[in-house]
Length: 480
Image (cartoon, rainbow, N blue to C red; front, side, top):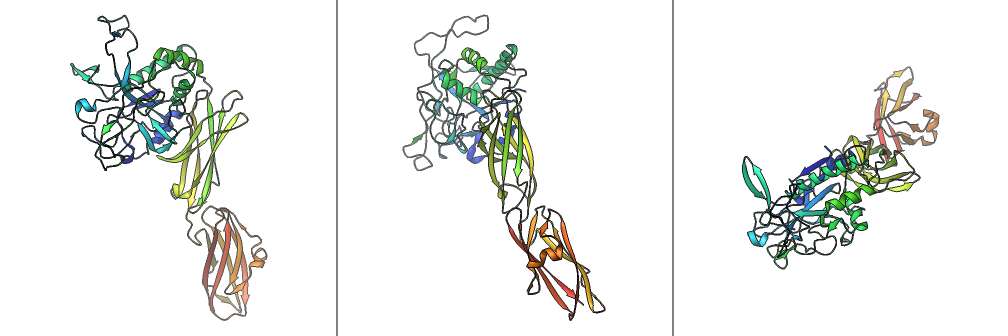
């Protein structure tokens, strides 16, 4: 499906952000995901049935995911104007022109939290594409992205359920309505040869680009708010109310405003490119100790042309987000790198996915790599062994083989070798023929000792592995 509409949600602070990886996957597969911004005004962590907020300012997920388009709510403000026909036109509509709008907030009418959700994420940094007049310089992802009529108490949506006509509203209503618009947009672009298959991926970069360059696409909502009552002394509540007011340009109430669909289609058509991309991911090093880190590098390349893709690439493992990086052009490709500590991963093999969500000129894509995390406890990566053990004397000589085996999958250099208290580090190459132990490899030496009395001898070793970690290991061996 090229478009997903989701009207379920929950406040960020009370819900895991793990499903963001699904939004990233959707964007990489060309799927557009739209979600409602919520119906508790600026207090998304409070129930819509409450009369006052007690949990502070908050926004909902998945609406706050950068890969999801958040849809807020407005209310028609007809005033004394005449915007409706008494008969339907041939297309089924009865509105005669654009109807002025204000932010949706029926909290005073209902005496409970009932208004468009909006605010700043506590998890996600502001994406590079979220730039337009009015966008706050807060460094965080702001929602909603745009808004459409949502009041059930004023020009509500008429829905027939099991044969019964009902009036509904909330941001759960404009979200599927806008999803329907996006279905028509895909059809329009296909019909006009602007795309070769349905699926626009993350549309947010295009929405904000249109807001910056085309004044006719959005109806700016400059009145109303999502301010709701709150209990003084609770988070963010000092005056008895909290929230935001609609202003000129972008605001945390109605986003960029409502869209003029005809103008949006016409301008979108001039922006859309069907240039695909491929994303390749590498990790250096690909095997790390649990105390080390690795650098993930994603290279995004266009399927044709010489222009380099722009935007950001996100890194995930399973359902966990590891972070994101801005792309830097190098020739016709672009790269984004992120340093990831082993503490962000699990022991063993980790499948890492790099997702490029696309831009106004390039489609999304993803790539993967494996990063293996090994234990970092002292001596655990190099294990000495002696054969036979214990060592028995043949005549006056003890004959045995001393072996060092690398167990953690990390190449290492042997820098120290002792026999009891005697230091033979300078003779490592003489004994073993090399100072290097390959990842999961072994080195060995066969020794013949004489002139000893039966005793326990301790062989000691130290070294530095490829991740820069120093290690020590020892083995006591009875000589009989």
